[in-house]
Length: 392
Ligand code: HEM
Image (tube, rainbow, N blue to C red; front, side, top):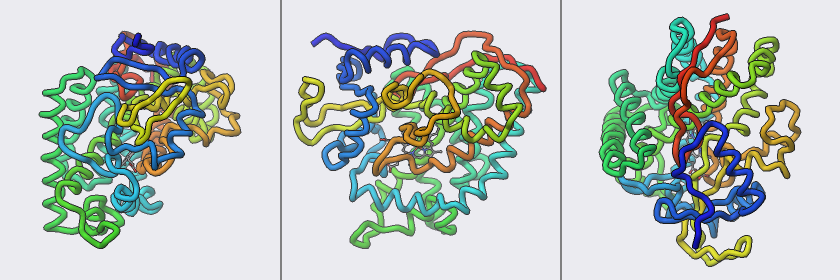
């Protein structure tokens, strides 16, 4: 069968969206030969249909394209409900309103310091110097990591993403192992020195049990902490860089937010839609199903291109436009939907809203001064971006 979609082709900042547009119109269930073959859905309605049927469309066989876990099963994403749910609840306990609000001063401090230093310097790689370290620092606060652990997390997560981007399996394994080692270390420490489970996600996992009252098995505990260590680092970085690329192309948006900073939270929500960083979270079907005249067999990965769904003009008119008057903006799928919907959403929102506020406050104008390096699947967006900024 000829393939409809080749995610290994070089991309520019705009090109993935042109391809998604074409696929939505012409080939809404696309076939790709890449990464041992997968299907990809791009229409909003189809993706929602899959997400609304978690009993049939599961994550325990494959939850992402490309790839599979190199360090074992990592809940909650790699488990299906009901097995997944106690892990998710344990994480949610450490993400209550008060806990997330308590991260605010650290988020502001890190955003001020990273963006402030960048603006003073005037130019550099925005991803390397700002958008990638910021989520690592925020995340380390939430996880309660020590300073040396924070440094290790950032380096390991950066190398892990690079290995993924280069489709380098050996490097994915070796850097994945560094993250797994860090996860085991944090677990050992919290076991010896338990913290408040409403504050510390690892202590919350250790204090939780399966539905039958059994403590979580060691390998799944380690898998969960390992997943949590990396899952919140890449998406915010890509998204923040996309927003800055947007400002370079549309200085009027930066001017609008500068004139009225109250618009920043609404703008951030629209940016989540417009620059959704994921196209590769996946499901497999338990049963053979027909979609758009094609048969999908059980176990075949189906990538859900959230980034494409969020620019479906049957749901979001003028989908490529930045607009603040969308009545259905809360329907966007940047964080997914259903039992696996992003558990870190409140942290992501807080972190990116503050980052945007600080950026708008400090930067008069921004210019891209070199080639934007684009991520591969499962993400979509900048992973390297040389920019010049002019301070206010
Ligand atoms: C821009 C920021 C972020 C975006 C766009 C994002 C997006 C997503 C999406 C789309 C999913 C669903 C995956 C699926 O459908 O299979 C997800 C799941 C998840 N996210 Fe996020 N995420 C972000 C930040 C974070 C952060 C900061 C954390 C941690 C504090 C986090 C933790 C998780 C976890 C643990 C899951 C798995 C939930 C489950 O399986 O029940 N994410 N995220």
